[in-house]
Length: 147
Image (cartoon, rainbow, N blue to C red; front, side, top):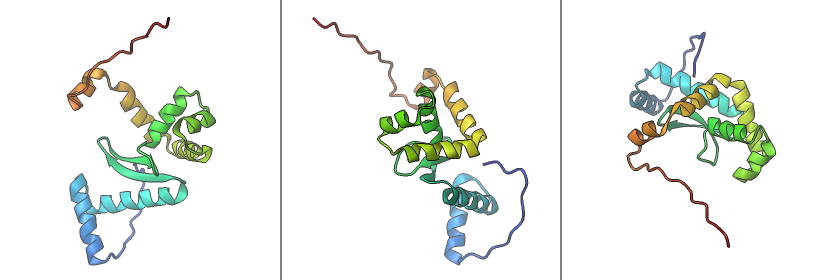
């Protein structure tokens, strides 16, 4: 989450919350100030967009669709393959149309975030994948002849 301009706000946290914030900051290599700003931003986005959650992933913190393993960018990637047909994607995922529309709403509000994740995915090839997942193997489907 990129922030062009910022404002300084002071807040008082219970001791245990402050300790937890510092643990999160350390785990991610952030300052406590950066961690609190990110968590506030994520909380604001969750309150503004339906079905939204944030999770750690190998690519960093990402927006995910609640109740699923799909990041918002992955829903948009699927939507692209269905040529923008929200109903078809909803049927494919067995979701209500509103949940796919929620992903679209988020992607429209934060296009740079989604474009960056999609571009990173598009740039990965099988050799890159094999380095990350040594068990990866190439396979091809065989067409069977029917008599």
